[in-house]
Length: 156
Image (spheres, rainbow, N blue to C red):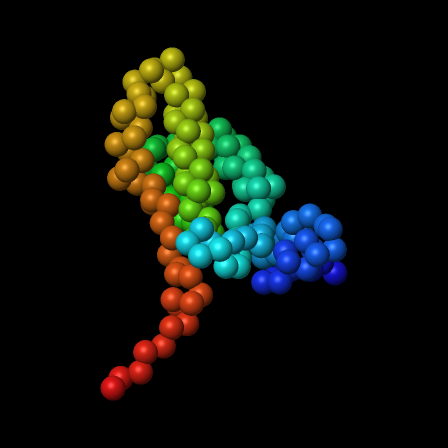
């Protein structure tokens, strides 16, 4: 068992121990943290880095295997994978990981398109960015903080 929660840091400091431990659960690393605004306890959830790396490796392999398919077909497949990851990871305090994932996927796709043939030079980064803006979903937080989600206002 690990000590985790609002009083974990205070209890560990009184015993002369370091910061509270983190743990991985349901695809996220859970971290005890303090808010910048008032210094009170908050829970950070970050996507597990090992899983993200593994998913990116899978995407890279698939892109390289199917790089000669039409761009629209690859885009359709890639869009569903990226959207699924972003939907699952769209929790507060995880936007940096989501943006990073999306950016790496974009670069992997660009590399796969450039390796299609000697004509790969026609794929410039500017052209790729226009394609990405139209086709790949942006990384947005889709779920609010729990205190906002569970806020109930009664009619007067």
